[in-house]
Length: 528
Image (tube, rainbow, N blue to C red):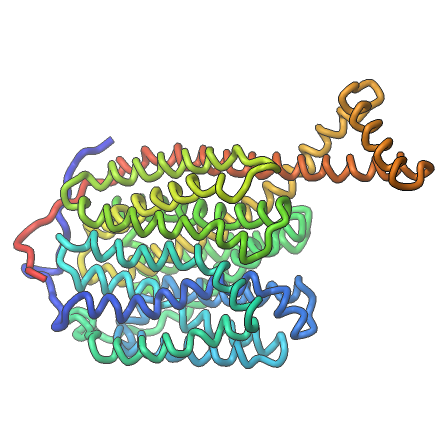
């Protein structure tokens, strides 16, 4: 494990500094980014209402989510190239406008087809917002303050998907699913006005030579990302590789991905410059941020499912149970922002993954008799852990890149986090479905005439039904009750397994932080 320190890279002898206060710039870009990240999860709980209102099945309504994720993911890694081609400020303003207008179209949709089309537009407009916000904040703050910048950025990226289901459930229950989209309109207008006033393009974007459009690269990028998102979204529903079309789509995805890599490495003006992954810190950082996305979205899916399916909670109540994680993340990020310049960031990342592993393992002690209060502490601790990971990891991963590389790098970085989230949701969904079947088969083996505990319970339940109902049907009713209890216990055990696998993954990934080179500041730091 390397303990080598590497100075922060620059574009030249002097760092570029913006004309306006970095905090005004941060607020401008984070308004739009928070709005976009929130939209990835806020509509999830409204799907049944959307399906009913637009006369569609729940399965058809899931394309409302998939269409957004596909278009969003395609644009993410191309952000650096798009910024160089159109100018970052112009690109950001146009995309905020597209996202805001398409949000209005989503809310006004009169059919499922219209809603899916509007969501595709929304994903295209929102795709550049995350990486541009990260790049702008990394460039606007001097190296000594980049930990603070990433703390602010992290609050939006980590907190938004956590509160999204709660907010979406509350809006849907009290108003209409359409308002989950309409709430973007005032935020988008304010974000456009602020970005137009305070944002500016740095010299290396203003003076960058106009590059030609990499049509082949963009086409291959669209193909493999679209295929991957559809596989992740529909895999469990179609029984994964038992489905011939999932197998065919996987082969197509792998082939187009390989072709994309070969083309991008050979073309002189690629739409995604993969050579940035030759930077060790950035390569390791993208792997770890993918794992963080996997655990974040995995546990954010598990807890509400457990509370709704096994404990009978409403969508809003289950969302509220996850919300304290956002408070933990905000608290941790404020702490990390103050100490990151004084402590080795790699140790903070290791501490964060270890704490996240402990919190995930703690959640595996769930049962059918606990209250929401029992989940409070591990949920808050998992939020604190994510704060300790996100801020130093983002700072170190981009800390040895030149400023002109950051725009391209943040697109890849954001894509990896989102892909990790998609993989996390697919993994936990599969673990729950397969694990429940496996545990049910094991538990059924105990329901025999030779098991005294089972026989005693069966007799007690049968006698209860015989006293209050028809004695002739009491035995069948008792079998039904025991079957329901068995199914619940099997499902509970599958939740336990899923939390423990996530805990093991976190504990394995923590030491990988020391594959990163320690980043140190170099040169004079401008006062802000």
